[in-house]
Image (cartoon, rainbow, N blue to C red; front, side):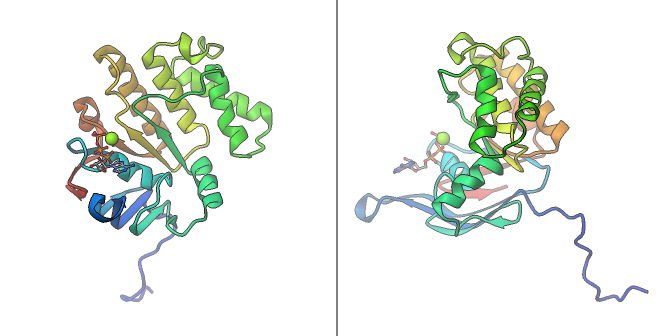
Amino acid sequence: MTAASAPEPTVGEAAPALHMAGVRKVYGAGASAVVALDRADLDVGAHEIVALVGPSGSGKTTLCSIAGGLLAATDGEVAVGGRDISGLSARELTDFRRTTVGFVFQFVNLVPFLTARENLLVVDELAGRRRRGRDAARRADQLLDELGLADRGGNLPAELSGGQRQRVAIGRALMNDPELVLFDEPTSALDSKTGDQVVQVIREEMTARGTAALIVTHDARITHYADRTVSIEDGRVSG
Ligand SMILES: Nc1ncnc2c1ncn2[C@@H]1O[C@H](COP(=O)(O)OP(=O)(O)OP(=O)(O)O)[C@@H](O)[C@H]1O
Ligand SMILES: [Mg+2]
């Protein structure tokens, strides 16, 4: 018999990939202070793809940076995969970034003197996973293959096209099986055809893995495919 007052079972209910509540971010102080986020609330469910749109200067990059532990909020709650990150030390944050989140930026920042394949493998080394070298290599090769880069693994970033570089960045963001991938305008620096390929890769990779994503974008190809689109204006999220 089940009592009417029994709590809902929580087993199997994954924590939200991202929970932000009442998040404020103020840059600077005094007369020059800028309020970039003003009590922003945002949840991204486990496996959910959320697009974030808003005008220039509305706080999108600030929000992503805080969600990924690159920047500390002035105030408010930030939890990733059910884990509160607001009180983590610098060292713990570094560990959190290496193991729990992935980043893909507008202007891809690959390590210029490493090949595409090495740019993926370096993630595993930095995370101190001590994944057996062969496992990491297998994973890197599998990702490069899925991303259509099987024959470009030995090339340096400077020898790749813009879309290929962005695909390497996506592979790098996925190397450690993150719970949440943060994309900041991943297609805005690409021409339309290259952007198509990158959109397709994002969709396939996120769907196949069930990885949650927050995607800052003005690209209708992405907002159409996202589970939900939220807007940000003057540091406040709605939608
Ligand atoms: N390091 C900083 N110091 C001071 N002000 C900053 C800093 N970074 C951002 N800002 C300010 O905070 C506000 C939000 O910036 P943010 O970069 O988050 O906007 P955005 O929505 O990503 O804009 P864009 O679409 O142009 O990339 C802006 O007014 C910006 O000038
Ligand atoms: Mg920005």
